View (spheres, rainbow, N blue to C red):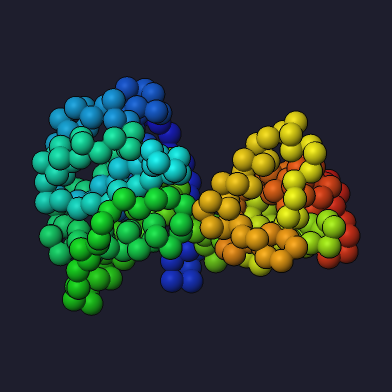
Length: 298
């Protein structure tokens, strides 16, 4: 089943361009084996669940050199986990990862014109690993990165290749390399800052494409409300952020030591309030206008 093309807007060297993405669903199911390509690009992505392992490895693309990503959940922490690797023959290398139990999806990128050398794929691997660690969305299971130095012309070509990879990854359901700081492109719409205040603590945040971002330096109440007994997910989420080191105790309140992205304004407000909260009314702009009122206007 060949799915229709979709537009993807991105920024490149200060100029806005539109990319055309072609998705092919091999079995007609978006959760199963699929391929992805971009117009005017020699690269190609192949992705699928672990249950499609044999199908992925039987494809001609798996015999080429490229980079691959294994994604799933870390069994110890429950957090998203990722392994990023490179191989001169994708098929041969991935077979050796069956002893890793965390991953449930494999995605790999190759070049249709077979121009990726060992140095190229090592460079791409190093860059992707760096991006995953900076994003902080997942446990990176690699012990170390190989990386590679390239001549200037080759490096420019691989940066272009990397840009295309980063465009396709979210389309394939992998957003673990996307920074949690909101807009991913210079021309993307940026939400104005919003504020949440309660019992002398104050937090700053903004709407994002993925939900709601609470900024580093924001504060949350130290003690949960009685309502957290009725809605224990709030208490569990606060504890999760403490365990991850994103939320720490500071005097008579809790402090966010890094940007944290939530699924919704209400989830963010609940963590700050220490119990159930309506994010549409808890978050306000500098003039005191609630998020609900702001969105009603727009």
